[in-house]
Image (cartoon, rainbow, N blue to C red; front, side, top):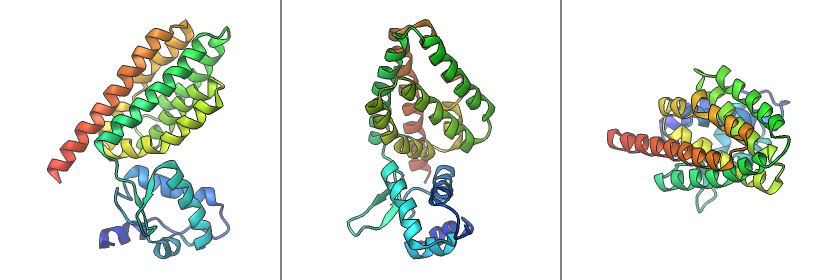
Length: 231
């Protein structure tokens, strides 16, 4: 492990031993989302537990959850590292999200109470607008908005499938850097989705989501290529 990796782990700061696993999980996810723990960083269990001031057993639970979310990967020896997302994976992630979210939107558009659903989405949209300028808060609000769209469909299998790729989405957005992330997560890019639900326009919403996801993926991939050339 490089000296830079050790410094990043030590900089996370201590967590009191009595705090819950969720707090450890949140601290590590924030460090990954902000880039403080860069893609490829090896997470040495002993050092990480010392840096956070928690038991290795509790730490393992948090790491297991991050791995299930797709933010961490393990090698053949079981060593965990922050996931490195490829351009192909970015395309796959956003293609799957388009399929899932289009299905959710179409379901909402057929309902008589779609105005109620639109109201819930508008609330999530306002949280997104209020978070603008804070990359981590905006990332959480962006994902929460899209998750709400899927949850409102009341299709539990759909929602479970969306959640299974949400960690990968977070990793992909993080890989592109904050400026690309802020552009992709802008309020203006999401507001039309609510309008399509309210109007019951499933076809228009599906086409909009295809463009929405495609543009987001293209920006991330372009920035990843630029970083590769510069680095």
